[in-house]
Amino acid sequence: MTFEQIITNIKSRDFKPVYLLMGDEPYYIDELTSLFINTVLPEEERDFNQTILYGMETDVKSVITLARSFPMMSDYQLVVVKEAQNLSKIEELEVYAKNPLHTTILILNYKNGTLDKRKKLYAEIEKHGVVFESKKIPEYKIPGFISSYVQTKGLGIDQKSAQMLSDYLGNDLSKLTNEIAKLLIAIPSDQKRITAELIEENIGISKDFNNFELLKAIVEKDIFKINQIADYFAKNPKNNPLVMTMSVLFNFFSNLMVCYWAKNKTEQGIAAELGFRNPYQAKDYVQALKNYNAFKSMEIISLLRTYDAKSKGVGNISASDGELLKELLYKITH
Image 1 (spheres, rainbow, N blue to C red):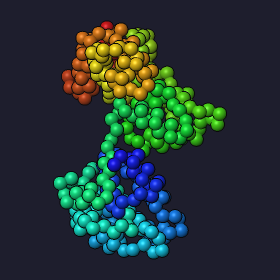
Image 2 (image 1 turned 180 degrees about the vertical axis):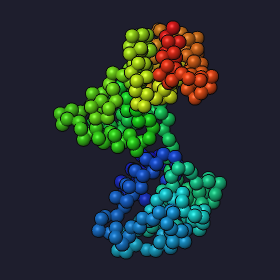
Image 3 (image 1 turned 90 degrees about the vertical axis):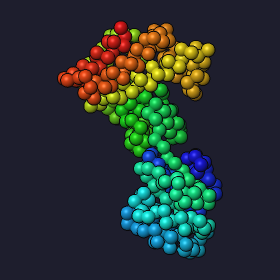
């Protein structure tokens, strides 16, 4: 099941007896766990019918004993095992998963990895319950996540602002949503969109000197703007790590290589080729096709790989990240 399908089932009270929530992205696991805790039982029934355990502090026998008990004056009891990856001999839960009690909802909150899919426990949960694997979102998809998440809060966010947050905060969804929560509190009551100005005021990211603006300047071959941003990045390396800038550029020029072979090179055609929902997102690619040919894009991708190695000390003795960036940008635009 997907994250959205499980949410729909919880809200419609279509429960399964066992849920294995596992994976490398803790955000979705914690969101679903919290929704179960806040939804399955009314508050007045939780003292008797809701138990929250921690994998490090309990054992399989105790979990099974609780899961096999019946609810008191309620349709369900909820048993949550947080940090289930720390539960010793977890595979022995197979005995219960084979024949789970349908008045118990057992949640296994399993983070930082996945249960071995070859084990019988996995097969039994898949057969009688629900397995959800929470995977890390690739960094290039984070702006889309931010836009969708903000929409669920009844607000909007432009592409530049979403990219600013993505570049600064990375793909840690818990950190991202916490920072967005701060913006939602700070946003004026008459404003319906998160703007670059709001982000600059409350999070400290420059609205004029960031990877979004740098990429735009590269696409347009605006040498003055490129040098301005490069100088700013060199003076503020902590907030503008070279590895993030190169990741943004690598993703863009890798996508641009796809665009050269697109039959329809309009914004609509490029958006369809790259899987963008909004044709406006393809605007920079249409412009870049005019300023960079396919051979130059291939050269840029090669340069990015070379300078990534240099930033890690390969073939570089003393150049700082700021110096490497300036050198890289010169070679990209000349």
